[in-house]
Image 1: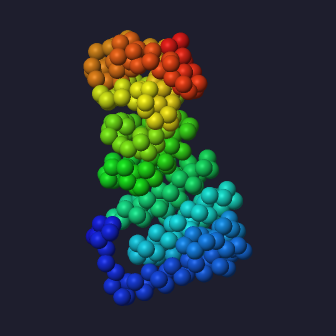
Image 2: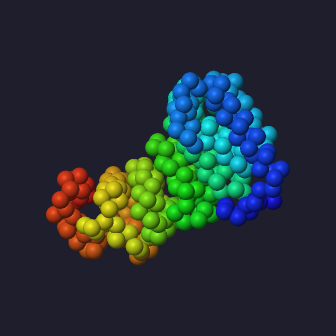
Image 3: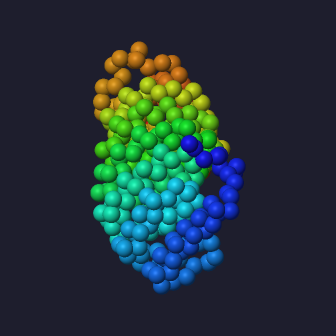
Length: 300
């Protein structure tokens, strides 16, 4: 059975004591393995000095407990340790990836968020990505079911950003393209930036062009206003430029009736007068990189 929603949980005396014991056990592992101290309520700065034995104890603790507070602390510690490349191989060799990945099906949002953060750090290792890719479908489900603009949703998008740097796993994200574009239309600026990082990576892959062009996002033209956040504007332009380049290199426009009138194809890539007007306005944008991206689109 799922735990109560975040903010509604109430710990009894026994549960609170167990959580405190688990937290002290994790802190003790740090004390045994770290030589530097950190400010109160933050992990020691020498997390990279944790040896294989300490990391194995953390992984075993994560497997052994059902207490979400202990799980969170263990995952935070593993995530901080995984920020250092020397620990990424150790955690993988200790089967830590599968243990952390198993937390993605947990009912407690904070536990899933911390698991995603840990996998995000571990995914900086290309070898680890081969194991992490089996969780992409679950990550996409977590993004779709999470409250919009939540830390859980953003953690999932950050992991997908790393996992989409190469084209190896793009096919696993195809079914989530409508979700990504919904977040692009309805999300906060922070969410929009993170979604665009994923979409730019996907759009760089010619094999994804048809899937992206078919997608519907009527409000996408709003991202190309001169007053829009620069980080959003630059990534939106890069997304459009990638699609335009792929369209020119591959014959994706032969069957135009496969695209609806509110698809990305008709909005951005079929000589749309509205988009052309937006691009003309952006040629006068004060930012040099913005103008360079506009020129890239116009000259392809």
